Length: 281
Image 1 (cartoon, rainbow, N blue to C red):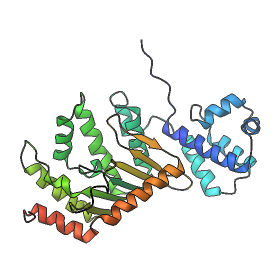
Image 2 (tube, rainbow, N blue to C red):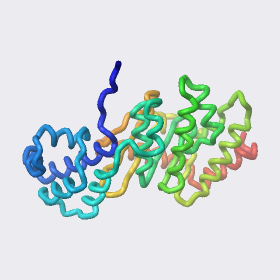
Image 3 (cartoon, rainbow, N blue to C red):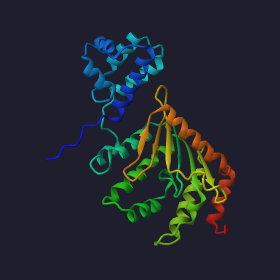
Image 4 (cartoon, rainbow, N blue to C red):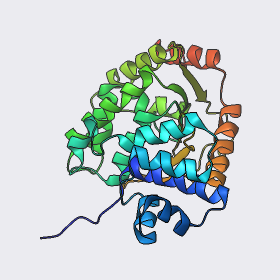
């Protein structure tokens, strides 16, 4: 029987990563930190990498020993350390999709702000049910129903997170075998979504230079203090994610560059209405 390779949970990896950043900033060797908890250095190293659980009280004891003067940040890390792993609506799909995909779903659920852009299609969090079904039943996938359900459930984040989406105008020229009704429903959804107070939607026009926004789909997530931002680059295996500050900053600058070339929010909404009414040629 083939066993799955052990991988750290998102929560444990984030807790361990934040503790490591605090420890390194304070100049404390990992061996000294391990002795603070009465652990071996190997066990503590596994905890920092997310393979071993560190509890609320242990987080607070370690932070006190390190001298972290950030009560809000310490309390947040302790809170997440205490939360059970493998929870959330997405857990039921753990055997059906890649770990990388489930990771971005879990991170989205915790995000305070979400920025997303795609060079070719309407981004997934903005897709109408019909558009979602077209994308997954036409793509090479042996579990389209699960992928459809996950994508629609993910859209719950639009009800609470601050969201900024960049959409290529070229996406509105897609043609589907099931007819033009798919795109009309999609345009209606985008117009409705654009009127939400927490949502900013911009259209990258056909007239934009082809080099702008052509390097692939990406999502940038930010979280409550003290968690660091995360960036995700889409690929057929579910995407790759980076927590590296320099890489995230590079992608944030790329997102801002695309946004600066896009239409304003009002111009974008007007263009969506033109497409819906069949006025744009």
